[in-house]
Amino acid sequence: ETGVTQTPRHLVMGMTNKKSLKCEQHLGHNAMYWYKQSAKKPLELMFVYNFKEQTENNSVPSRFSPECPNSSHLFLHLHTLQPEDSALYLCASSQDGREYSNQPQHFGDGTRLSIL
Amino acid sequence: DAKTTQPNSMESNEEEPVHLPCNHSTISGTDYIHWYRQLPSQGPEYVIHGLTSNVNNRMASLAIAEDRKSSTLILHRATLRDAAVYYCILRGGATNKLIFGTGTLLAVQP
Image (cartoon, rainbow over all chains, first blue to last red):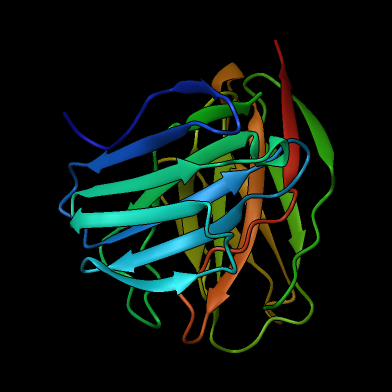
């Protein structure tokens, strides 16, 4: 299997639930990213991990908690979400996340999250 | 981050060339011009990037103006599968971020 795989593809949850989104990349990359794409809004970068270390948190509320146990896996743990958190959550990876790196990012197809 | 301006939408006919413009008048000397596209129900897909010279790959060509204040993504023969939102993004300096705008929605007619 190649590329960036995200599971589940669709998730419906209540505001009091706890769930996790999973991302796995088979590209040998060392940097991984979470993005949020809300309806009619541009993609927004949420978190960046480079060699398993978080290097960027783009002022994301604490109800979103990322975890990167190794360079191939990235999780987004969700708890007590709000209706406005309904969106498409996209994971991406790149060879590395160093400064001045222009390497392409490879995206998964996302998890469509709906908060009831 | 330097900003890009793209038309909201464009239309093309199948098997004809498509020229997607992007203006970036505030580009700095270290900014690369990146293009991504997002097909329906998929994540974004890297298309091409360049700094000063025109670039070609199997997907498209990138033509960069001499003053670098604008660029054009060229799809040589549009297919129905090329219908997508195309994003022109400036990326450079110490940041590794991709800052997405609203892009150009390309419709391809059979």
